[in-house]
Length: 201
Image (cartoon, rainbow, N blue to C red; front, side):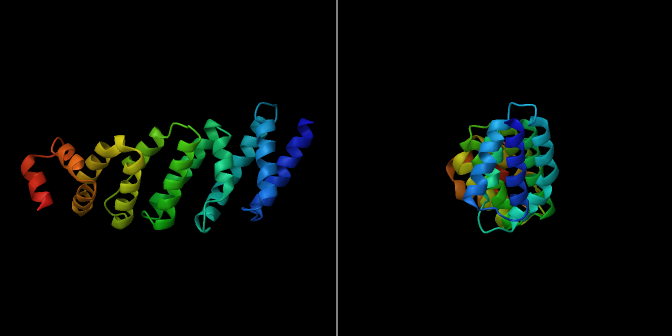
């Protein structure tokens, strides 16, 4: 029975690799087989297959018009090693792209999906903020920060501190103005009052 499930997993996984990202029947088969094998002797073999192929699949997903269901299916599996691999791929791709629009929205989609699965994404978000750079696409940085803040308000302070560390303060200025008084008050605990006033002039 387990061997049959493993064969069906491989069939669905190979179909996915061939480009069938939105085939509902294939995605259903993939999800069911992953669930049925998650606590069996085939678990490690399944994980090995997924992690081996994820870099290629992740790059393919970046150019698709909408997030492919396999991302949701893999996160729903709640396998720590697979989750970490997905997060590392997302951050690496985002950094290499210099914060491009596709990579930025891929990050946001993953954060939301992890949240929907009740998975703790705090470390993921903290690592993203830590790796923000002033040389990245500034419009995308501001969009990412604003959309992240809208659903994860506790990350306002780390975002402000990161933007304050940039030599060019334009991202910080625009972000603070977009958030409003809460950001101004919090920024006053990070920077000198005179610096805050000068920033917002």
